[in-house]
Length: 438
Ligand SMILES: Nc1ncnc2c1ncn2[C@@H]1O[C@H](COP(=O)(O)OP(=O)(O)OP(=O)(O)O)[C@@H](O)[C@H]1O
Ligand SMILES: [Mg+2]
Image 1: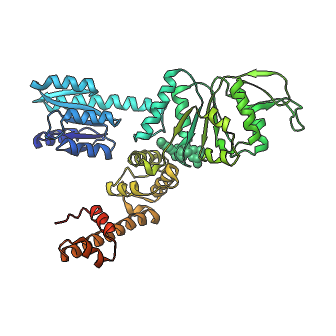
Image 2 (image 1 turned 120 degrees about the vertical axis):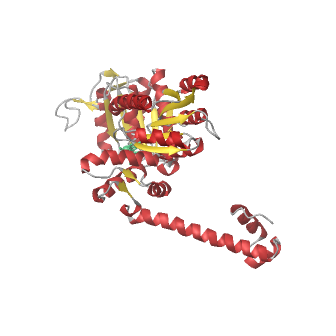
Image 3 (image 1 turned 30 degrees about the vertical axis):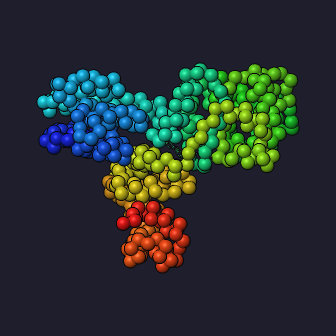
């Protein structure tokens, strides 16, 4: 359990820290101000935050509000004076779990925290079963979770199209929708890219015995198998164009026939499709039917590439460390924070799949508790050093410009002539490096 203490009084930070350290399996962080505390909350996956209500700068209540706004999953306990109990009540309304008043006895605080840890443990187990793998707290992920909740609350299963680059977690989102909306119902998947186009139709529709020469016996298709549940059409961009017309008909009429049969079968399926291709481009090229696109895309879910949601990287890394720890029997428990910063800057062209594979690879070799940059492959190290080189280059450029400007008494025309750049370029560089005309 990671516990964060935010209090401006050093003696309180100190006594709380030493008390919390007595509880098994805890790692304690502390901060003097709300700003500092929020920084830690953004970086680390803090389980419990103990926050003083009256802090200098932003108040404890504001910190709590920020936690809730950002969807950070931290349980909050407030510290307050007797005279401020009214504020504590307000905090409970915003979502704090508990509070204690100064002066407090350390054994009382310890009991409150231990109880909370127990209930978090129980809940984590429950969450693990409900939703083991959909990690992230970036705006993009929160929005997806919100959309899925809305689908659930609407009680209607309107067709969803999940779009995202390869490795962003489209299958994970499909499984998440199932867990939230249709837990015990059938979930049937067809990966259109993995099945030859000629077989896609019989997979989906099934066939009657004798419908074609290979049809030795009657076979149920995926439409029937998913009836009452979810049909997940993965890589739908690879669906055969003729089959697309047939799929469109099934969606519209909610019934179909097995190949070789005259009997119509009514179906009710929640259709989730996914693609890493740009369907609009496929439509332009005549490879995807526009009318089908509108039918399957009533609720769009767009998963951002990992490089656009760096906030998720820390949480994902810790999740994968925990995930591989047991299967690899590895001593690794965490990652060093500077190393995490480098991972946050890396491009991750293969998105979460690449991140997951990387963590697995480094954990096979690392024989210590904390991962550091030395454990990571060259291309990641290089990405860090090339951004360092760029920083150095920028620094040199900034200093040169400043020198030349000074030598010309900040005369832009003369300085730009000497630098061999236009006045506009010089001005924009001055803005970039915040160089003021003195
Ligand atoms: N939010 C997430 N939390 C935890 N693990 C994730 C998350 N998103 C993706 N992963 C993991 O990353 C890997 C890739 O995810 P997934 O297979 O869902 O990607 P995809 O978008 O379907 O990729 P492709 O287009 O290549 O099929 C999987 O191992 C998955 O478990
Ligand atoms: Mg996939």
